[in-house]
Image (cartoon, rainbow, N blue to C red):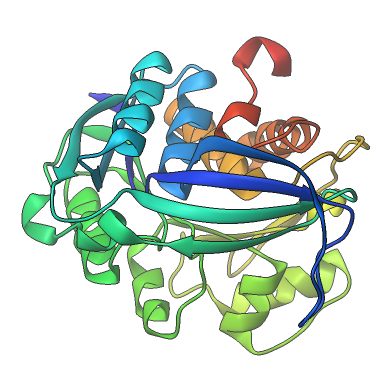
Length: 294
């Protein structure tokens, strides 16, 4: 029995630091360039594992140097990667990440092997919480969530990147976590206060017992059901790099739910974990360990 089973992407991130994000047509000078492990699935799995959850991941990577490096990272973090498929016919996923001095980022993701993960390859393992995002095929994610619910797992969906065909997946998730941009995409509406974000989140609840959480960066996060609303403020921190902050939040939330907490108790821990992550460079390397939160 795992605490957290993640179905998701594995990418090698090429992270360039710049003074500011370029406007259309603008060229800016990079001040540094790093190759760091990433991908929403890998990031979330490492975030959960570092907070003490027994974690496994389902995914796909290339049979290349980047794939070997990502699997070595997972092994080092004590994430079971025996369900990651190796592909000889395509490369490992890649993300091009620009990080401004303000900490804001812009990311281009090349799915490569991540886009080949198929339903037939899903190797289920008993788990308390099943966590997925949308950097692998939506049909695969749908089947993963369906099987997870059949086996009694709490299902958590991070619908990022936002895609038009994936709204139908929401009904399969007990908990949905999305950011302000994704919320605006799925509701076609904008908000400016925690209460307004909560009202929009409530629109996405497909059934009783479902929770929609909106991460709000420095403003923390809101959690809404059809009948309740809660706003969790974030601590003030010095932001260095926001890459992976949402992944950290999801992994920390999944780990805490797996350890027996309810949403109201898990929300503060997830907010604190993400707040720590943005004080560091990179995605997976920035995920905090359990002793840092305590």
